[in-house]
Image (cartoon, rainbow, N blue to C red; front, side, top):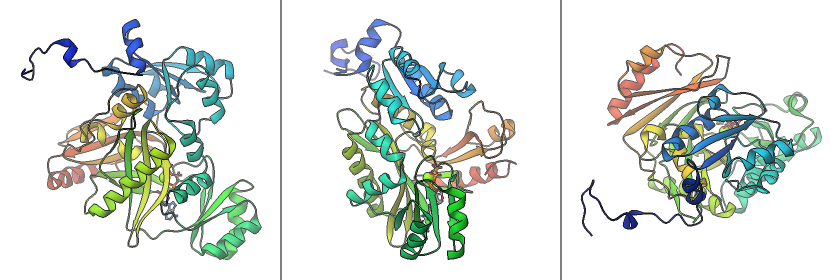
Length: 396
Ligand SMILES: Nc1ncnc2c1ncn2[C@@H]1O[C@H](COP(=O)(O)OP(=O)(O)OP(=O)(O)O)[C@@H](O)[C@H]1O
Ligand SMILES: [Mg+2]
């Protein structure tokens, strides 16, 4: 059958069979698939911004009101341990996903009584505990920094002796943006570090001498189809991601294959559905995996303009049982987080190739308020425009 790009092929020939897709019935019945999101921050906002053109509608569940979420959907206020509130939320949507990994697994179990939840609980539970995470990586032969689990000051002293110094003591649970971490450079610092973070389950790991930090973002659909975005290079300051560059420059094919292989192994092991990220250290001795995130990831914000299909669109496609979109890059991208203070929007938008995203949050030290992506046709253009952007106060 021949037809041009705008030609009229018979509808039946074009119709995609959405077997096992939540969209199938929902779309016929009433105004689009209803997606529920646990959490109501900027990741949720960007998921909704990607899903709305696909006919999806969004309801967020969060303990507090959120301007980011309110702008793009309904917000149900409730506590994550309120079973009745969770069930009522779940019964108002067709599928539930989450935008941060500290959702309790009990909350997910509760919702699963009513409707499907993706990504799977096993991935969520593993990502909530740095100890489980490292054990999972090791089981799959994925290299990690030397580490020891720590439950007491005595454990920490042993860990420091075994692993060596300098190292980083981290809480196993609830860390983000470098919070819940402290460095140890001398034995005499162990007790203060334990007092600062303990008593709690902790992990002590050796400080990795890396050349740079990388991340790979992958997406897996319900039928197991898996695609990877180009590896991004990430720069942090004070434990917070500041910039991502994608595709990462000077990455050997061997390392790219390795990174993708790690992501695929983990996605397969979890029977994963949705977008997934792993953070890695690029070292002279090879890649070392730091952590994983069972969700869309800050180092993938560049995909909104810099990839054929953004991580946000691919995540909602995956959780709704739709076919995935192409992850190929479109040009060269650099993403800058806006932290603590808003820049002058007019100055930002005067820079060529720039895309500004503000999340509707008020200013507060250390808070991610938005991001800017520069997406250019050549690395030279990218370099020039990124430099112009960096000259603006409160960027970088
Ligand atoms: N073992 C290590 N060796 C060297 N640097 C490290 C190590 N662990 C963490 N870091 C540095 O601290 C940053 C934050 O650490 P990590 O990603 O483990 O914590 P996080 O609080 O979960 O961060 P986020 O959730 O924002 O990614 C890393 O991106 C890296 O720059
Ligand atoms: Mg991290």
